[in-house]
Image (cartoon, helix red, strand yellow):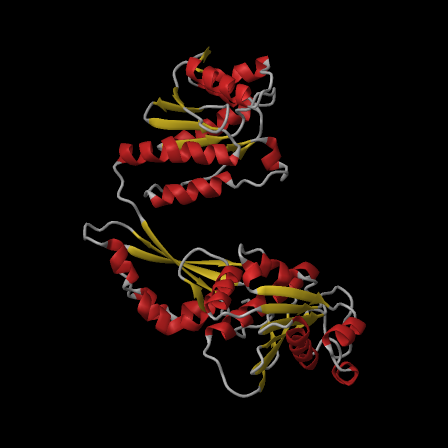
Length: 432
C-alpha cells in the first residue's frame, strides 16, 4: 500500500511497489494486490481494513515525513488503539544526522522519533523516519518511508529477512531470457511444445515491453535438489528454437547487450538519424562505458544535411525520396565514412501526423545498417502516432543492429532489403 496524493495525481511514479514485488517474489511471497491511497485518514483506515481481509502481510510506504500532510503514523496509532511515544534511539539517530550536516534541528524533526507505543521500531540507517512493525490479530503490518532509497534499505536490512524467517519459505527461482525481433504471439508459436513440456513446478511468463519480450521462467520448490540447475538445463532447447531473437539471459537492456557485442568484437559505432532525432544515439550512450565504442551521431533532419554531411546523392533523394531504403543505405554508409566508425545505423521516416505523400503514408520508416562488408535496409509502416513511431523506429534499428552484430562476419559487399512490412498486420517484425 502506497500512501500519498502525489501518487494519485501522477506527480510521482510509484517505483516502491515494483521493488517490493520483485524482492518478495525472490523469497517466495506472493503479492495479492497493490493499492495507492490518498492522504486522508478515513481512506487510509478503509484501505487497512480491506488489506487485512486478503493478506497476511501488509507493507505500507509513505506519509512518515515531518510535515502536516504526513498522517500515516498518527492514523496507525489510532488504528491499533495506542498513542505516540518518544523512541529515544531514533531521537539520538536523528540528532546525529543533523549534527553531521551542521544543520539546526527543528521541533518537527524531533517528532520523527515519535512512534506508536505498540509497534516494533525498525532502524532507518539512511533517514530520519523509522520503520514500524505491527502484529495484529494474525496480520503483520509494516510501515516504511516513501523515499525509495530509505524504503529499500529498510526492506533489505529488516523486512525481507524477518519475513523469510517467519514464514520459512523456500525461495522461488527465476530465470529471465530477453528477446527482441519477434513478437509475443510468434515466440509462443515457436516454443509452444517446449512450454507444454515444462515440469509442473516451472512456469513460463511472457512479459512484453516496448519492442521486446521478456521470457521469465519461475520455478517453485518441489522437494528435489538443484532447482536452478534443472531450470538452466531447459535453456539449450530454447536457444535452438529462438536463439536469433535472444539478446540476453539476464535482466538487461537491448542497448547494453549491443554494447557488450561491440566491445567483444572491438568495434566502434555511430548513427545517422533523421526521424529519430538522436534517440538512437541517446539510447546507445545511456550505457555506462559507451565511450569505448560510440564515436558520434549526425542528426540529418534536413535533406541538405543528408547531402552535405553524409554524402547522400541528390539523384537518390530526387528519385526515391528522403524516406526510402536507398537514402538510408547512403546515410549509413556516409556515417561510417564521416565518423570513422566500423559500424553505423541510419533512420529516416514520416513520424506524423503530417508529411504523408501519395506513395508513403504517415508512420513509414526506413532503417539501415552498414559495416563495410554489407549494407542492410528495411522499411516498416508504424501506425502508432508520432511519439510511438519515433520510439518504435529507434527500437527497430537497434534490433537490426543487434542481430547483425551477433552474426558471423560476411565477405563481400551486400545490399540486402526486406519487403515492406506493416505493424497493422501480423507479419513478424522487430516490434510486434
